[in-house]
Length: 304
Image (cartoon, rainbow, N blue to C red; front, side, top):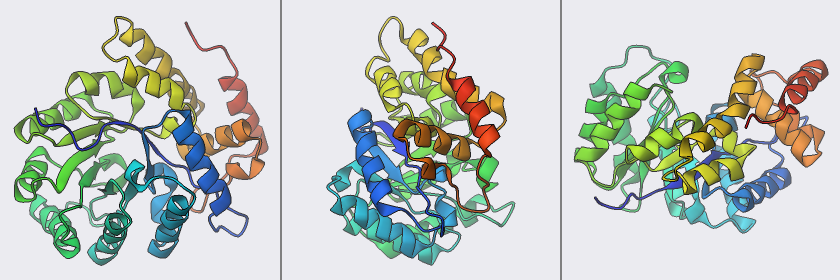
C-alpha cells in the first residue's frame, strides 16, 4: 500500500473572537501551539469548528500567516479553503500551497441544492486547475448535513483518477459507518488516498479500515486523549480507549448546546480566558447559565 500523504490527529482549530468580531490573533497563535504541544499531529485552520465560512478570505489568509510567523511549521497545517466561489476557493488554496502548508480541505460549493456530480467535478477541477501546482494536496470535505451536498464515491474516484496525487483524500463528517466504509473502498482503488473521519467516535473503525486518522473538533479540548487512541488503536484495550474518548462528545451532544459554542466555553475554562467563549454571528454565545450547566456536566468523573 502506498504511504498516505497525511496521517494523524488534527484539530479543526477554534477561532478566538474579539468584542468587535475580529480574530484575536495573539490568542489564536497561542492556542495553535497549545494544541500541538498537547498531542495533535497537526491543525486544520478554518474548518467547520473554526467558523470558517463566517470569515473573509483576507481574514483567513492573514490568520494563516500569523500562525506560521509565530513558529508553527507550515507542514503541520492543513488549510480550510472552502468557499462558494471557485475564484475565492482557488485564492485560499493557492495561498496555502505557496505558504508551504501540508494541504487544503475544500468544501463543495454550497447554497445550490441538488448539484450534480458533474457540477461538483467541474467546481473542484476549476480550483485544482487554477492553482495548477504539483505541490497541492487537496482533501475533499464530505459534510452533507451542513453543506447540503454529499460527495459520492464515484465523484471522489473520478477526482482521484483525474488528479493523481493532488486529489489526496477526503474528510468524512457524515458520522455514518456505511459511508465511511464506502470511502475506504475508494481509497483501496487509489493507493495514497487518505480517509479521515470527522469524529473521534469513529477513529478506531477508520484506522481498522486503513484510514489516515481524524480531523475532530474534540481535539480542541482533549487532544492527548484522542492521540492516545490513535497511537494505540491496535492495542487489546483499543475499544475501551475508544469508549473513553467518546464521553466528552456525548456529554456535549446530550446537553443540546451548539457544538462550536460549547467547545469554546470549555477552552475558556481550560485557559482561564473568558473571552474564548465568544462566537461570531450567526452563532450565539452560550449564556452564563448555560455555560454553568455545561461545565457542571463535564465535571462528572469519566466512566471507567
